[in-house]
Each structure stands twice: as C-alpha cells, then as structure tokens.
Image (cartoon, rainbow over all chains, first blue to last red):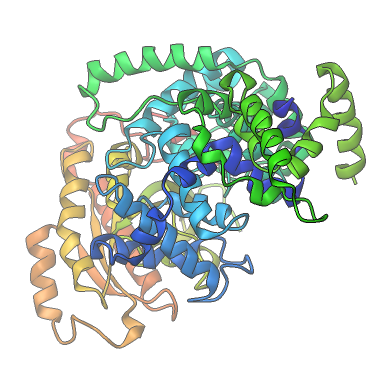
Length: 378
Length: 212
C-alpha cells in the first residue's frame, strides 16, 4: 500500500516524482500545459517582486542550491513564487511559502515545483498563506484542542501560562516543519504529509508538544512563559530524530474526522469572536486519495505517459502496446484505486518500487523499526 | 558576581518594523555579538534573551521578541504584543518606504498595547543599516527629533547591526525609559493594578513574575 511506503520513507531517487503524483500536481500540470511558461514570461506586481527578492537569499541559506546570490536555486525560487502571485493575485506572496517552494525545488524542476506548491496551497493547507492568515490561526486552536486529549499535562501547562498556539505553531505548520526538524525527518514527514494530508502536520506538532511538555518532570525547567517558549523553539534532538518521530506520528491516534470535527467547533467559536472568515478558502483535502477522488485524472492526460514507459529494447510495436497501455490506464484511472495517480506515470519504476513493499500492516511496522534502528541509532 | 540583594527586572521588548529592515540582525548582534548576512526570514515570531548588568544593584533581563515583518503577520501581532514593556521600531535608512511604515507600526502597537497605567509603551526608533552610506536621513537630525516627538518615540538612533553601531546605546535608552515609567506616580496611586513584570526580587524565580 502506498501509505505504508510513504510511512517508511520514499526512496530519494523517486521522491520528487512521488510527491508530484501524490499531490496531484502532475495531473494539474498536464491539464495546464504551458501555463507556467506563460506566467513565467509576465513581469509580476512590483509589490510582490520586492518582497520575494528580499527573501530569496534567506531560504536554507547554507544549502548549496540556494547559497549563491542569483544562482540557479534562487532564480528558480523567484520564478516559482512570482508565478504563484500571478496565478492567485488575490493571495499574492506569503513569506512562509518560500521555504515550502525551496524544499520542492530541491526535488523537482521549477514548473513541477510550481504546481506542487499550488496543490499544497489549495488542497493540503488552503488559506494558510492568504492575506488574513485566518486558517493558520484556526489550526492553532484545533491543535491546542487536540492536545487536550493527547497530553493533558502539556495542555494544562500551556493554558496556565497563557501561551497562545500561534506563538509556537505558526512556523511549524506554515512551513510544514521544514525549518524545524532535522533534514532526514523533514523528508519523512513530507512523504507522509503528501500521502495523508494535514493530519500528519497536526500529529507531528502534537508529538513534539507531548514529548517536550508532557510530564511534570519536563515542566520543572519551564516555570515561566519565556522558558516554555524557549523550550519549544529549541526542541530536543532526541524527539525530532527521524525514527523516533515517525514512529510516534504513525502511532498517534489523531484522525481526519477528529480534525474536521474540531475544525467545525473552532470555526463556530471564531465566528462568535471575530465574525465571518474574511478569506474564503476551498475545503481542505486530506491527502492523496481525497485529492485524486476530487479531481480524477482524466484519460486524456494520461496519453503522453507512454513516452516514459518505452522500454529501452527494440522499436515498439505500436498496436500491441497501445492496447496494453489502455488496460493499464483503465485500472489506474479509477479513483477507487486510492491515490491512483501514483501508479499512472511510470509503472516501470514507481510501481515496482511500491509493490514489493506491500505487506500487512504489522509486518511493515516491524520491518520499519528494525530497519530504522540499524540506520539511525548510531 | 550575583549578589543576594540584587534587584532583578524582567522586561519583554518588541522589535518590529517592515520586512528586511534588519530586526533579526539587530537582535543577533545585541545578544550574540555577531553578524551574518545569512539569517533566515522570520516567520511568525522568534525570541532571544539578553542579560544586562544595569548598575551595581540591578540586573535587567530583556526578552527580545523578533516579530515577522510581512504585513499579513500583522493579523497576529495582538498576541505577540501582549504584556510587552517596550518596543524598538526599526526601519532601513536605504529604503524610504520602510520609514513611511514606521507610523503604521507605531499605530498598530499603540492600538493593541497599553501599559497598566494607561500610557503607551516606551518606543525607540532605530534607523538601521546606517553603515550603507545611502542615508536618507543625512543631516536631518532635527527633523528626526521632531518626528519622534510628534509620534511618541522616546528617542531614536542610527544603528548598524553589521558594524555594531549604537545598538547598546539604543537599548539602554529604552530600558531607562521603562524603568522611569515603572516608577511613574500614576501607577503607585493605583495599587490594584496587576503589574506582572515588576520587582522580581526573588532571584530563583525570575520567570515567575512573568505569569500574570
């Protein structure tokens, strides 16, 4: 199953493509051929260009891709972020989009990164980056409410010190932990996030809170508000460590339904205190399956695919191959197939790599922990 | 070094201003005595702590709150400002637009935060990047004094985080005004007001006084 593969970590060589399939950005790109190039040619609103340019050298400044001023990394980052302001002029540019786009660019070319960013901003985290930042504040309240069940001790402590969730979760959530966790953990979290949606972000946040503030012992050094916030800002490397964190995230019983239910509760409260939401966002889609069901890949979009599949062997026999291809397409285009998009593109690589891993749940967990312990407890 | 009869003050200070004016750099310079052109853009809020030996009897601990400069994060500033005792408002001398935004930041601050005595929090204006040579304020000291008076700043400084110019001085100026405003007579006639930051003479629980 794809979910298990994503929980175990997508192989680095496939990661960029897998993210595109999972997020539905591949389909989106195919439906909008040439759109990015079109946006790329436009100048853009100087108001946004100025801000974007100020941020280009401030994303992962020590990553080789973004280290040089005006280098390819920074240029592509500019193109992607500028294109987004033209694609959604009413949203413009939010600073938290830059690290997201930068991580994407480390895994795919600019056009692909652009559509992937679009999917994150519209499907996974709708409203997070829009003018009023309402969605992120709501999610702060949802996170806090979920914490009540996950770690009453941490919840009580934060309540007592009157630490508003937006003091610690804004950067976590808006940047999908890309600036918080060690790099190997970032990638594992993103693998699961693309597959399972925002639930993963909530779970990571809850795991971090629980293991930082979840026992009276841990709270001894958090006597004041500032000490607590300092603790949440400089998290213990132990709890952010890839194997530990991923396992905790997988096991934490926080579901989409809980998040949705809490969303309704918090939305109601928000309306009572702040009035109607000022930025209407599309509904949040919880991961690859929901996205592919909401927007099933049209047959047409699949036709260019065979160019990737072509075996290195002799010239293809057109007729025979075509019919084979068709039957394959039928199978994978059905939304019931889960994130069908995953299988669509390059069966030669993606599928083979996904299938051998398919195994019953408990078994895969075992292999996860054993493999991880070899890899990471050094 | 710590004497037992030492007084300790804890103040929350805000550092606000437009995006890219150097708020993070000023804080890093002040707290860690260094400068790097590679600071990441601040998203949401960041914090740092500076301990000052104010005088022989007084230690001042400053919590510096580094607040994201992009306009849309202004939707969260009410939470960030809560219980602050003073503020630096920063602009970039090479970019006039960031100076124009100063009054907007000051209004935002004063509309969301007042001291227990009903007064606005002391604010110091920082004209940062003064090392860059393209100084829009050049020879405009008198005008700046006037501007500060009109807009309720207790002082202003030309600063450079890069060259470490005037940052300590600006901080001492702000702290001096905070201490003065604490001994404001208006406060002492209203003993009922909860003053969460004051007089934490208990050395062991300096942070406890921050709880309201």
